[in-house]
Image 1 (cartoon, one colour):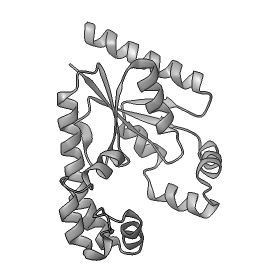
Image 2: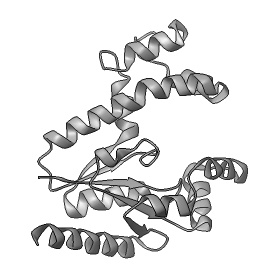
Image 3: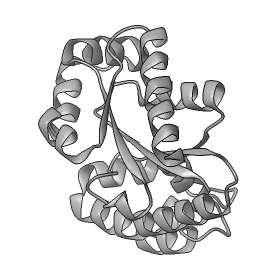
Length: 200
């Protein structure tokens, strides 16, 4: 029986690093909601036709796939279209994640989704982990890895849950402000605790 851990946290906290550690060191199956969403928007998959119908023929490229860049530009300027797209994609992604969790034989499954708490993934996950990094570390990472400006960093951070909200909504905090070795040690401790709890 798999144990499903929901991974969440603010932008720049290093959720991808934690997922890599879980996969490479502890054999966890990793499911990222963004990737599932991208797959479901491919031709022939669940979200392709509804999204194509929502945005119209202008977003279909010559090869028959959706023009993500064009869609991103539209939803960036039009909140209503963003909400309509989310109403198509989010339920389909959740359904696909549930299907994958049920069919998996992995001991640990890590599910990462930006809106894990807001989209009520407690019916998918056994517990939630909040990946924390202090604001200064997050800013530095976003500048180095994504080339974000201070203005963009502020806008993205302001649009997400606060540290307090993440802590209230999650069962465990993994502090990813330091080295990967320190983060790995925290993950190892957490998984050992969970294993002990399940064996008792």
